[in-house]
Image (cartoon, rainbow, N blue to C red; front, top):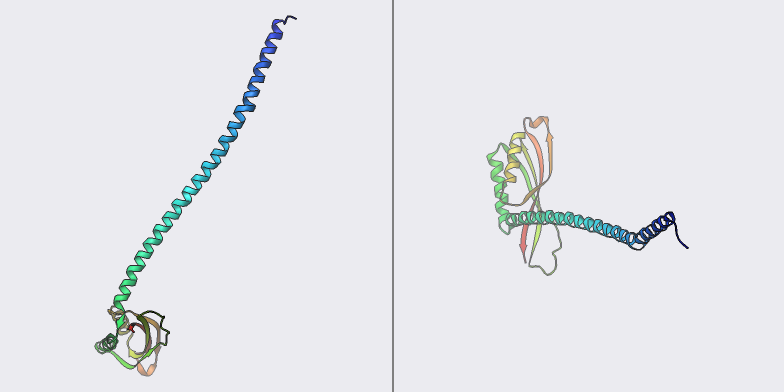
Length: 185
């Protein structure tokens, strides 16, 4: 059986189509699938890498904040009163009230009852100082700035300002201060 030229061309085209289909089925499609899997793996790795970079930046920020807070804490340790220095603190408050146009009506220190942590040689006590003053508003501002500049760790917990007509131009001020004292065992 002899094939005509036209039949030969059709058979040749059929063989080429079958070869292209076989190439696509057995080689190209599996490779395309592998490429898709690898691209997904690359995207996941990039996501993890970006997540790691973000985490690292966050850790660096936290470390910087810890370093800053540690320095601040060391500054507070220097400002905490030890033993007899509380008397110096009270004298400083009295001197400030004498130099400014104010009258110190009462000054009441109260030691806060706290439990000492076990196993430590030193612990901190909090002493509350309640003061009642008669002063002008400007003198009160100067007094509070002076308290802020003391070499001790002092916090102003409460300020109450009352205006009474019989005391004019003075104000009646109630201050509550907290002072931390290092108490050694």
